[in-house]
Length: 125
Image 1 (tube, rainbow, N blue to C red):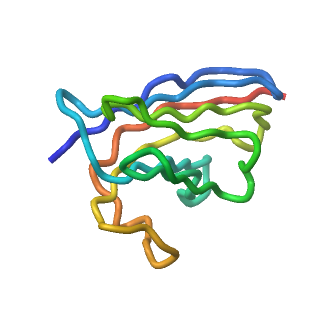
Image 2 (image 1 turned 60 degrees about the vertical axis):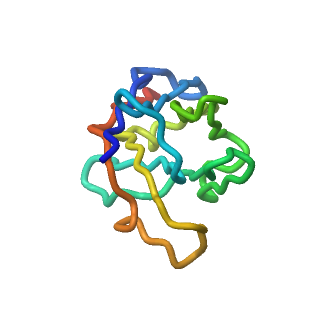
């Protein structure tokens, strides 16, 4: 099973940017890759997902126009470029993979696997 490792988190002021990365440990991975986040005291929520080819992606309404998910050519790393960050987006950001043949509204968070340990993003006001 692929293990995913997140990096790139940190402390940033409101309005700032961070580029998060999700890498497969020691190998490439070919499934859909999603980013999720969990704020203190809240449930984990979907942020973005990208297809195997990198040609299709979907975002949570709250991050549309501010976050961009991308996949490098070797498909060994998926990035989440975050901009205009808000204090309420302070959370642990996780990546995970989905190996289904297609992605639709019926796909649940529990259908994702190979969850990483997460990377902390703290946005100060």
